[in-house]
Length: 160
Image (cartoon, rainbow, N blue to C red):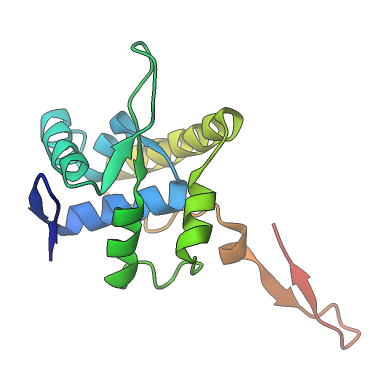
């Protein structure tokens, strides 16, 4: 599905959609982790593809100091594209305003999000070396909550 931009036109690949969905879920992802998760650890293809996605305005890089790692995030344009393509159908539905609010994260929260992604990369990498794959890794409380009946006929929401 082509995505046009003033500077570039790009045809999204399945791997791109997985990356964009991952950016939606995690809110921020270092290029090194994106490389491990979506590009089989191959840094050159990852850099080239991410550069094309950045040129198309689909992803951006958070401002950083020279010595800090590159941290990617999904832009509004990228969000609109993956949402319109139905690629977020099994995730909590967000309005554009809610997406933009969720995208603004503090430095403290950013550190936490990146540490969570460290765990995801560790699991995925270890499982891949044993011929298994990580099918799902979610930290969204809305996706993990459920209703339970304690036995007295009432129902209670159980949230992580």
